[in-house]
Amino acid sequence: MTSTHDVVIVGAGLAGLAAARHLTQQGLDVAVLEASGEVGGRVRTDLVDGLRLDHGFQLYNPAYPEAARVLDHPSLDLKALAPGLIALTDRGPTRLADPRRRPSWAPDALSPRSGGLPGKLRFARYAWETARLPQRRRSARVDMPSDVALLSAGVDPRLLDAVLRPFLSGVFLEDRLTTSRRFLDLVLTSFLRGVPSLPAQGMQAIPVQLRDGLPSGTVRCGTPVRRVLSGAISTVSTDDGDVSARAVIVATDPRTAEALLPGLTIPPGRDVTTWYYVADCDASELTHGDATLVVDGRRARGPVTNTVVLTNAAPSYATGGRVLVSASALGLHASAESERAVRDHLAGMYGVGTARWTLAGTYPIPYALPAMEVPLEIRRPVDLGGGLFVAGDHRDTASIQGAMVSGRRTAQAVLNRLGVPASS
Image 1 (tube, rainbow, N blue to C red):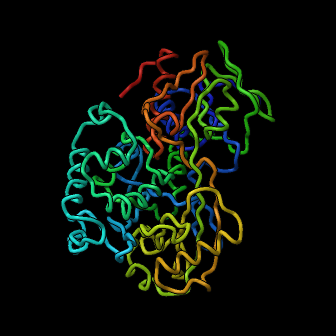
Image 2: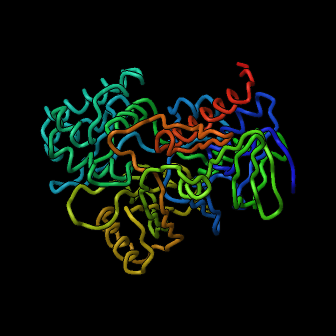
Image 3: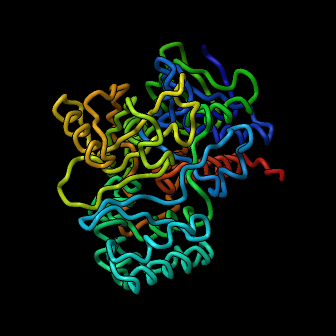
């Protein structure tokens, strides 16, 4: 497979595909080498017995500006979740949502079950004011842990512990809320501007769309890269031969990038496990037939961080009218004992028996997200010198938006090095 190209990209995840899209649009000859048999990296979907099982619970927010600029939303056939969540508290369940989208939920927002009204209004003000700030001004604010930022803004501690902490732990994949407030601000802004959704054909429809927009033959799957050597002409070694290029972008998962690029510093990773169940009850018995995220603000009730009835949003996730439920927990879990604890916790969260639910799949995902720690540098260097570049959400923010921004930003750095003027 010995060949020469303008640019070789190692990894066909979102960052690598986004970089390839930008570079090929500028007329460069690009080869994308992917170790696995399919594109997507961590954004993958398995089709198992008529069920669409994403590799871990993932959502796409159509308000992501970079993704919205690049992707064809109508073709993805996005199915929105309910614009809010159900939080289980020691005083009973409460529903919280943007009142513009779910005005009927307003009485729950006024209820004392999740804290006092003044503290809730202060949270709403923090979120709205943050969303209105330009990105540069948000990034210029003094960084601090998310819980410190929220409490400093006057958010009711009961609201923080009963609702915000269990919700944000599922976003950050850590429950102490030590994640940078800069990432918190990005998350709140995206939730206020858009409703998290699922592509009808599963999350992998996103990288597949990016791949299909590239020139034929650009992506070579089943081609693991063993070594990357920099030079005037860089070399990428594979089991099938060497590939040469004027620039190489390593857009693999962070740990593989670290192995291929000695000296690269990556942030710590966050792990998560997702279980998928086919429920034996009618969809209307679970969150009233809505695709509403459920979190548990009661302490020590079980391992589940969040759960949602996926088919209430996207019926295409299960054939035959079956009801598909996802449940996620922080960390890596693979034992039968862990699964039984999840099943028992779900019974308490949904108020139905789960003993006869069918386990459809278990996905322990190591390094599901890079940690966004304080102080957070949102734009990390991508040009390593010597014709080597690195892309991925670990260079920007831990999100689909961050991965795709990183891909474009790295592609632009390659163009600059090669002296190629970027057209509009």
